[in-house]
Length: 163
Length: 76
Image 1 (spheres, one colour):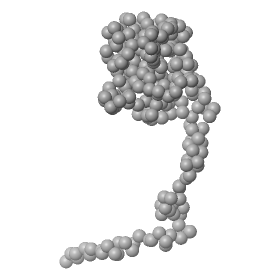
Image 2 (cartoon, each protein chain N blue to C red):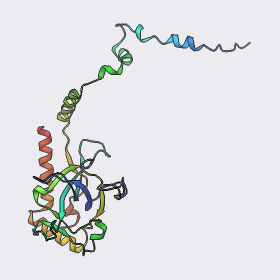
Image 3 (tube, chains in turn green, cyan):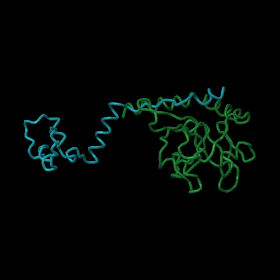
Image 4 (cartoon, rainbow over the protein chains, first blue to last red):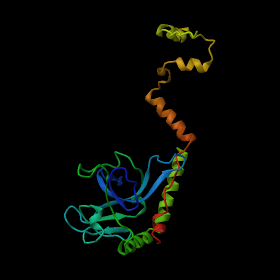
């Protein structure tokens, strides 16, 4: 992605996703929502709600067990090419794996110099029938994705007000 | 006959501005502040953190959606 383009829902980016109990490593994440700071002028820093992604196949080449709350993107999917992902990937919509992060370095960063100067490597088209269906099933499994995102934002705001 | 304007020498212009050392305690605070060195506002990194925390407490960062929720925008 060209640097400076506004982020969109469905963008795929490289991010140091805070998986609990795992050492810090770059993972692909799916941008579910862009956020702004309410009491800051337009053009201020971005926050994003992201879903952590991981390869569908483990290091030993065996397929990892799929779960209902995961959004799978297979290499055979027509949407796969535009994501620029290396491997078939699954994005989890489970509550602990949906995180609010500031869109800044070093959390979001280039994986290598071929990434055109932006941590966003591609875009997953969520408007196609197959992706909409998968997203709906995964969202229902967590009791509504919009509701989970709202809860995350409320919890974040409550924590910041208390600090 | 018109008098040719007298060009003031740069030395004369310089003497019109009082030197910083000439500013006495009687000068209003605002003017005094303008001649105070910038280093007077220097803070230690710890003090900066305290000030930042204070500002955050007074104006807590509040996030809100920049656009319609994902599922709603997809009509799901």
